[in-house]
Image (cartoon, rainbow, N blue to C red; front, side):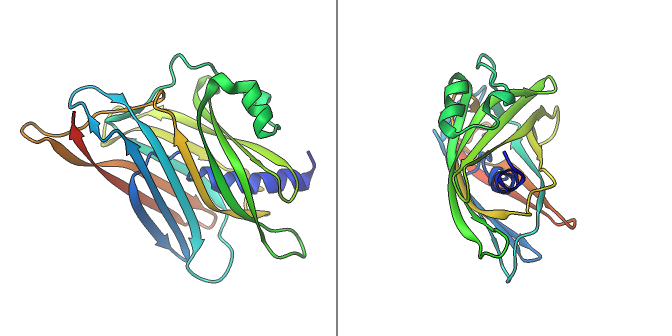
Length: 253
């Protein structure tokens, strides 16, 4: 894969995955210094056990724009913190090796790691080529169960066909905090070439119930609870960081 193809793929991948794996609900908007991030989504079911956890399905969509004229700054790092009552657990799901899906088309990646698939979605991007105006590009996102340096990880495979067929894999490390309002944390650092070839304008992803579970932290005597489901932080070049906390109401099953 040539430098131009790698660059375009990285640009598509980097911002796309910034929103790909957020288990969010409702809508949350965060903006600063001309950058605006909006995240929407849904979770099902909304009735969950007070004690313990039950499988949940999550669908999400995100949109990144500027509030002023000009291009978006380069996205350097993404961090997603999930409420401690929600868990990501891929135990028992086969592992996918990054080398099997990078580079590859969506069909090739699925063929190589079908049993490791834990989510999928789509993305839209504006790709810029020297001496040309930015143009829209659409593509597919697949999320596979993996390991990174011996620890749990999610391999997000992105494939697009414009300006040329390109693919990229962005690894998210998965860790668990023992204390605090948030437990599972997903973190990804983006390649240096990100931002040189374009920026993503939208992303959607559905994560399978077999890897997600949650309980409803309603206090005794109450049948529902409002709680912070996820906190997301997007760190951009130049020191800009945008954080959002997504709230959700659940009912006791």
